[in-house]
Image (cartoon, rainbow, N blue to C red):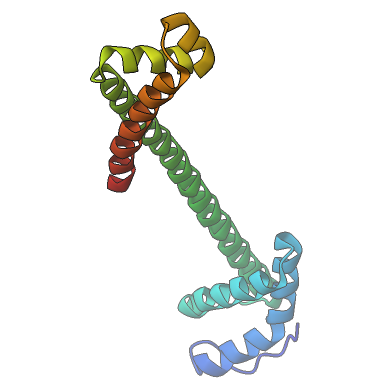
Length: 180
């Protein structure tokens, strides 16, 4: 850093700041790049720090090393503010993600519950034989042939009754999915 600043902050603030900027900017960016591991971020933070320096130009210390130290402290504080902002945003995103996941799980649970209610209602409103054949097939895992033998009816009768239940289920569930 050059030690001969011919202008003071009170006589010509713009020239004083310009000289100060040219003398210290490379050191400030290098420092910020070292602590952030990001060249673009370091340059952005340096700009922010120099804006604060400009706003507090009359508060700068007299000595050249003290000025550099003062600007380094402002730069470090800009970096810390940046970290706080990033952490706060991450925390908000994590909270949003948690709420979204929990909400999705609740909605999904509600949808499954509604679907099951539609299925139960549809099955329970079928005629007795159709309901019994459907439940033997779906819940007990019996084949159409096994149901026909057990119930003393033809396999085609079992197929027709179960087919009727399935068509009714498809129709009612299709309207449910259409609403979503």
